[in-house]
Image (cartoon, rainbow, N blue to C red; front, side, top):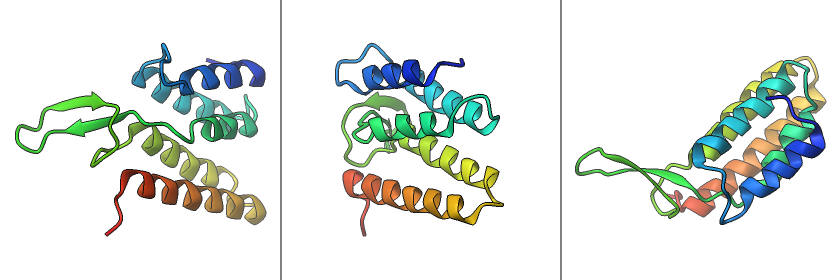
Length: 128
């Protein structure tokens, strides 16, 4: 869905709230839509990056039970895979490939990816 930058920011801010009406699937879809539109040149890249910035504290994750392999959604970070951050990381990587001819842009995207990955690792306590 193509939103104006202002509307996307408004939706992203609402989706970032603890008691948001937006489900995990809604947020994943919004991430992928925002980045797909930006990569296609139909939306501003800054809009997708604003979404990333607003979702710094995203906490809904998917948990795969080790004993029965049943998959559930939780809001607890410990030992979980954060699907929204995985989607953001994937899209930042593909956005980087769009700008491969512009080293000044790709380096800034690399810095952003490293910072966000470090934040996720620290938040999820995935350090060795």
